[in-house]
Image 1 (cartoon, rainbow, N blue to C red):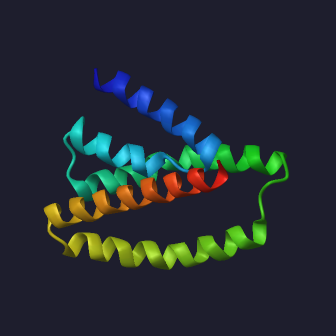
Image 2 (cartoon, rainbow, N blue to C red):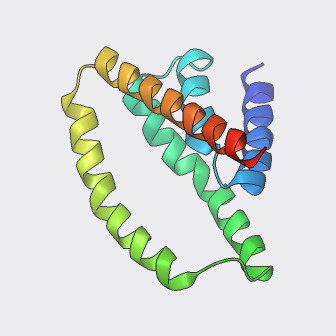
Length: 122
């Protein structure tokens, strides 16, 4: 059963990543916690590794369409390396429940931002 859930999760995250450029962590982390029983930090770490194939395939495909701005990607990516180091230190320092609440707030903030953008487009 876990294999079926993992395959479905990967497929859904891949579709969302291809459509919107998002989806991996927002889907992977809650599923890894709720379905697979991982702790929040372990789920976040596992999600970071699991998203690599999606990132590679999506970036390659978007590159073929001419949609990738390489300079911006390199600058953001290099800054993200420093950011992820700080994030990992912070995640390990916070209690599990506090980290879960912060993740929940992030998911809500993303949902509000997407709803706001959709409202403005309509």
